[in-house]
Length: 601
Image: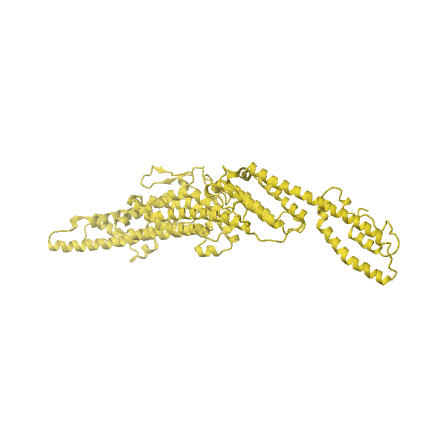
């Protein structure tokens, strides 16, 4: 493959270097096109780098020029020849640079980077990605992605390992590949080929990040695409995003930054910063656009807890984002993350306020059968129990008191709440108490739709469910406080007293009905209508009025009576008993005692 030696040339360093450069010129040699220098033996790669160094020295050698016109013309020819050789060398180095990058660029082995014991949507743990085992130098040549030790090519003896409480840098490439890339980059940049070098680097590494993104489940969605998705679909994507973002910031981006520093450290920090941003800016914006879309989406109560999960995850990641994107060129990433965090906080505050308004306006007017616990009560109490699970976050986010009514305002559509009675409570605690106040106000309005007073009081008695839910959550009980719990219990007892009074009145109604029925039965059974048809028609007419009314009466009040003591003393007769009673009317003789049997028999 070597070109034949030219006897007219002196066998100096430049000529030897030129031969090596031309021997690997892929535009004239098929063998050069088929082989890569850095994939052959190490000696050949070193020779090529030395040849490039020699050509560069020749280019800057002032002795090439001469004062005579003839010498100047010759020098110009030499200069042109050296420039041509440099161009050939740089084209070759660019190909070699690209090939090394592509050979050693792959997606992160993400399965080994997740902690399976951690919740996918909980606050990130600082230690979930820790690696305790030491990995040998031999493992690094196999691109082990859990190898946490990074070597500097500049010194074969020195090694560095940088770790915060959460950032974990891994070797994205073997040490030998990093050394080769550094050697090539140094020569390309010193020859004025900075743009070509950084473009190749950014293009290849960006593709590698894209592979990692796909493996992590990060989809390429615009903000509009995300906002058009149903919330149920977004919930699972949020869980996946939180897991993936921890890996991206703390491992993927941090390791990309370290790789840039290793390769370009010999040519200046500005260059390695530029290369890093060329590589990760697009992917980072794509990653954070997801959280941004959620932060500005339409607010609704069911979104609160996933928004808080996002907020907590991003808050936990913010110091790492600032550490990884610490240069001036990466200001935009830091600013975007901080702005998203602020918008998520504002969204959480807004959702809580809108939730309070939604409870107040909840419009259902159909009474729940039997006066049982209203579905709204269960929903609201389960909701604020979940709120208490996010106590630490929300105490920091909720800084103002709720907008409430006042007993002096005269506004009948809003309940009143006096803060003077709740001194020392956090704004979050005041919001939770206000939610309970609003819920009770709504339930009192719904109780008015019951026709029976005792059933209305029974419905209000279900405030006991609220008390039990508060007592069942230590966090919720601590915030709401025993003083307010006693106030709630007082409302329950007041409703219970009213119910007992109404129930007593109801029992009296049953007793009165029973006495009147027995009296009418004794009297009208002795009355006589001889005409059979007329007697039957009159009985039918009485039954049509009496039986449905009694059946409805029993249906409404049976449960109240039967829940108390000795119900048989009040509900003495069944519907069937009344039908039998009517059959005794107008027969003209005293009724048999067997016809008016007690229901208990």
